[in-house]
Length: 637
Image (cartoon, rainbow, N blue to C red):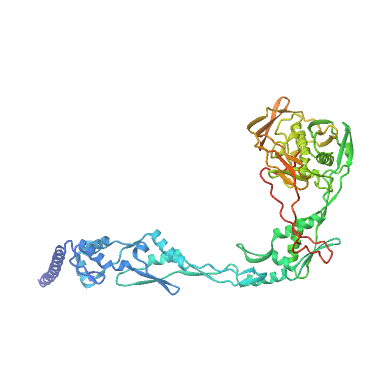
């Protein structure tokens, strides 16, 4: 009985406790539901933004309040600093976007998310521990990068490399200096990582790093020492008994400083200007070089040849090696003398073993007439034809008219005659040589050999057409640069042989070799755009002629565009076709007339060239050779 009574008492206590808990829960739920109903569509108490309690406000009211509170903040949300300077960008400049609408939604959602229990206790939790809404911020990377780069443009400073320069013939050094650079990506990351809030002004340090020069004090000291070596004294070049001196002043004029850098190293290199040293070496080579001479042959019959001129070895300055030696010696203080490298050059064709050569077949010949030429012009043709006789062209080699003809000088036997120079016909050494180049061109043309270089004359020259040859089969040459070239592609040696008949005024060139089976056909010559010459030019006074006497120096010539087409057959099969185009200018007649000589000044020009006191050969750079014009100046005839 007593046990039953005790159990009943315990059950009553438990029931009371459970009832109390249940009553408390009912009260809590009732209060929470009432709280939620009371603040329906309103922010709960305990939600703050920028030290303002948002309780009781709707979402739109919160949005409006936030915009008002942020109006001043977005004008200067943060300060960027570095190098003792400050920048105060706006939110727009930073590409910074603050979503007040989303923040208002966040404020309304506080206490209304999570599980049932969370939502029941949220009103009481917010009362006890109020929450502050954070800013919802996003960045436009392009806008942010653009702004940071504007700061970089102000901050960045390139390092100054050590340098050496020449000023008023003095070597002046430039000290190195460290530069600086704003790290754009790292600075952007710092800005995007900061915790923005209207009541706290943030200061962010820019990421600025030093940039060291590639060439510093160490390189400057090394370059200064090397420069001292270069200018420590003159350089002397020797070949046998001849000496050439490069003075310290000349070395200073050639001196330059070139910064070089690679992944492995960097250096400031004082060096002599290679092109100027090379030009100096070239002037010395002109004094030393004795080019080799190929043998020349005369074909006496299909099975017999005779040596006209034996081959001769020559001497050639190895200019590339000489340049290397001079540059190496220039940086030395004790080896200031250079032995010029001169090598023996053997001829391409020595003339030995001529018995093994056979020039049995005529491959092609070219003919022209120079009847009526003045004595000087006829002389030049005979000299040139004699000098260009018996040339052996090896298989696969190119024939060069300028290389084989040799120097066109008075010493070589040439006289002054009329040549075409620019847009005028004037007296010049070698007038008539183009008669020879034209005839050689025709021989190669009819032999079916590849013509690799051919230049026309400025205007039609009557000598080249007086035997009935159509226009466009001429070939102009002029030294330097205007050449005639063709290739021996027959697989066998080819002999070029000349024949001159001064009585009839005919010139013939024949190419002998091994029969190729080629047949050459000249297609119909295409002549277009004919232009008649204008009236004769006014007479030009010439004090070298007797007073009143007239001498013709230009002959009227019709202008035209000419295309010559050559077809080459083998066993009736076309194997090649090429064209040679000429644009001949219309040419006006011109006369000279004898006139009184013009008085010349008697004043002595100031300054005369000095003669070297040492008596040793002195090499001096020569002026650059003129560049040929489009229609090159060429000897007439």
